[in-house]
Image 1 (cartoon, rainbow over the protein chains, first blue to last red):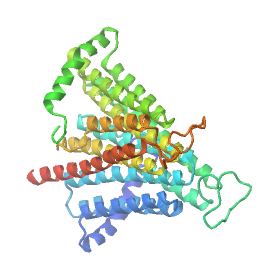
Image 2 (cartoon, rainbow over the protein chains, first blue to last red):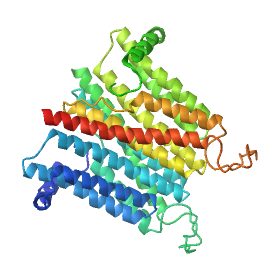
Image 3 (cartoon, rainbow over the protein chains, first blue to last red):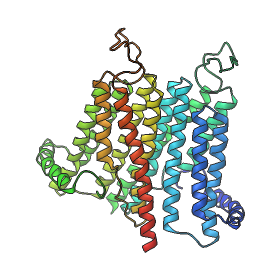
Image 4 (spheres, each protein chain N blue to C red):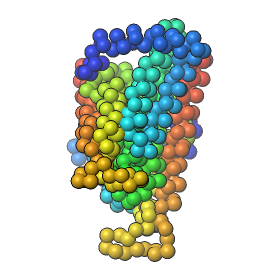
Length: 226
Length: 226
């Protein structure tokens, strides 16, 4: 993807690594579309974990099912079962699943009493979904819009990192006692994971908003050439 | 739109009414794309109003800028300035603007201490954006997906109604005193607007989730024919 920090060579290498695992899943009787649906359900579980403030678990699940998402396409290519419906299903459930992740994070931040967290999570969802929408809409009109600094893989890495750091560094939000009465650092105003979480989630929202603008300008440039 | 509760005849009549107003705005020197951007900024103001718990104002603005959104296309058609870029810009900013409305509602519910409200608002955003994404992605692959019970105009009417009723019936969320100390009904556990708000927002989320599934099945049926 133009402008992405992940090079096409690295992307190809990851795909090569995914193929044998995908073939193995296929030998278990799973179809590419079944893998797509399993990945969506896994992402939904990650979203529930975030809503329950199980931040680090949510982050690990985001990463695990982000990687799992490679297998449906890899299995389809390896077994000659690439279909337009499969591509549509994968894209639509990826889109909805990523939305549900930000939704879970927003709910978890609400439960934690952390308003800034609610704000960055809903802005991340609003702009990230604008990014993927812009590309699909552009392609439906015959334009391309595969540009921008915040495609999905980069957003999911930032999200996983935000959640793992948020959880591992003592949680997210105001430093209220945990239900068992434990206060990790009685002198802190916010829990230790709050600042890295806010910075990384804020980065997703800001980079996504910039990417929406990049894609609009990219389509405008094509329409002026045409 | 197939399955929509708004008939094509009504839709056409609304368009006919919009044309003279749109021409008037054009005579002020405004281009169709300028109207698109103004509508987006207005929607953003509605979203801020919701975030500040100015529910009824937010609802009125949603309705006003929902109607205003008719004028960009009407002006473009009336003056022969329909472009693919204009269509792309309109769709992308409509999508992002609707997302920001749900984001604002979620933040307002957080401020009101109303967790159920946060949940329905983020689910509405997650599924509503899945609905429009599914259609754009389907069309980019040569399918159609203009089906489903919750297209954008219906969602915006439900959202405006949820906000206006929520505000007019005494606010949304737990019945805590207002900043000036006023408690509208000291015997109520939640403010009077809470239940209609929750029901209507829940309807947006549920109908949108159903529409995503309808569109997936519609595309699958087409791919089996093809």
